[in-house]
Image (cartoon, rainbow, N blue to C red; front, side):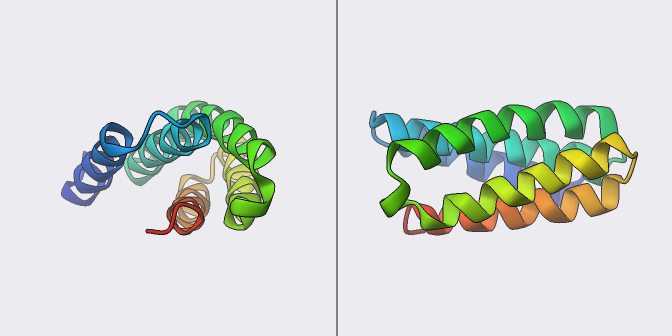
Length: 114
């Protein structure tokens, strides 16, 4: 794994550990963690693992989006980017899929005020 990937993963884990027990924040932390994993695998050219983690991240992002849509406007954009990441990963496009998981994480962070 690349150093950048490890840093992204560690940041996602730290966010997950520091977030409150609130269900929406839990889903956001899980979505962020899986998106970080998807990004790391995408950077290493592993489209199959990018797909796996982007799909799992999407499940959590959609759950967070549904729970408090008004507070998580950015989560809608995160969901769109994760869907794009999945579509590109299925086509073997790890680089484009990685871009979309990175964009998804940006919107997830914005949805929780970071």
